[in-house]
Length: 253
Image (cartoon, rainbow, N blue to C red):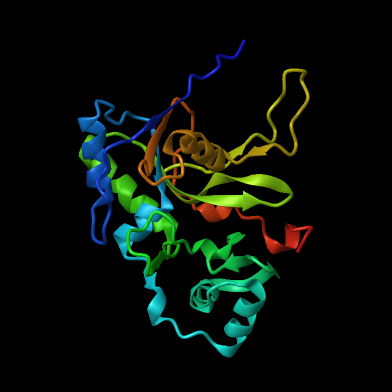
């Protein structure tokens, strides 16, 4: 019988309020040590997008925005602040669906999500919003490299954000950037318990890790980092873009 892995999610509590220029890798490694939960070889470190954006200065000042005529019309239909809608559209390739109160877009990164990830929650200054990092894979690599240098261990890092899901109520944490591991566990060609070959099974490992971490991170913003321990993963340099379905295979586009 195959051994069942014992998986744990460990919140990294006690991190300071993150500001532009902060060294996330050093802060995470130091706080893990201080908490008595030092990183171990094979850990997966989940970092909330919000603190990555803050550290990288990926923010916009609402008062600085000058909405176009097209955005003013769209914002009027949505019932939203046109200045914030302008920020959303600046971060978007296209509008997927727009109805009163809801704006779903494809971001410049290729993610399908509400408001292009533009967010006012868990920010001290009401006049500021965060946007998604320019390159969340690069953000994850920077943190991973520093954690490896500081601890000597091979760890994987993912940057996560909370997305809603089509045809499902509620939101879940997903990976928008990865470093050090394959975000997909490709089981095609494996044999199941009844000697049948699996031909389509591809597990979104990074999203499942992000969701596991969210159980201890919560939504308040007070625990923006968690360690997920006990999961086997394939090392290597990959991108979260591997999780995005190509347009030609999207049956609903």
